[in-house]
Image 1 (cartoon, rainbow, N blue to C red):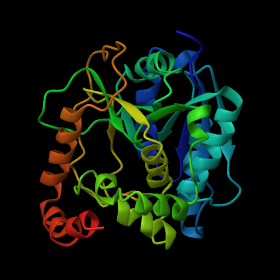
Image 2: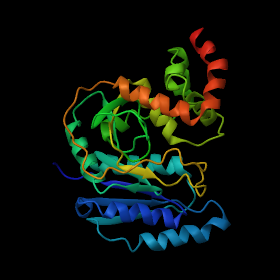
Image 3: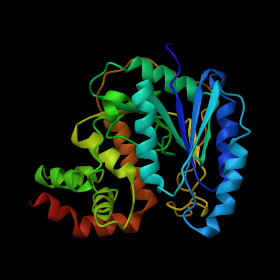
Length: 301
């Protein structure tokens, strides 16, 4: 393995969640070899200042890593701008990065998988990123596989890949419409990604993740996923700013290392179908409305 990738962790005001993330990350064998950069966003309001300061006091005491660098924002950037700026800053310096947010509990095998996969696919032109989370699907899947696009819950990438990130949502939307890819962009009608991209333009949401996914999707890039999840998102408990309360994404953590062997760089149709079925089951009413209103519109263009 080459040198370990730096880890960028983005925190705000959730002390309990941040503790769970740090404590699980520190249990990884490679934690002591890893540089940790923590980006602490500024308070959005006076009411948030106490919680933000509590998190900042906690992160100053973190140990167990090669070194810890804390970047305290002087004002509130918001999650999207904080992540875009932080990832760009770190990746320009180190050429690769592992990215986490403050609501992710990690398997003790997380860092080994991420670093080994970064090394394995560094020169694979069609691979844009490595992902550590996978949905609790019913289908038995291989140890690793590829899906088109990019994801946002515990991911890693390289400088050359991050340069494909397009921050202008209107540019992305126009390209998807010109190529008539709306239905595919919505995971064959099982998500509302296209609507989210439009909401980004109208400022109803502020999402770096939908722009990252769209950038990868339009460049026909693939992301490597594990067949057994190395991450659980604990932010869907109602305490977060951007996630509604739900348990549908909860998944067992891998109790043993994910076996990494170089596989053909191509989308796995079985895995894609498993994700589509997961979304259909998770949101049946949305699917019914989507197929009634949207599919005909997209396919008739």
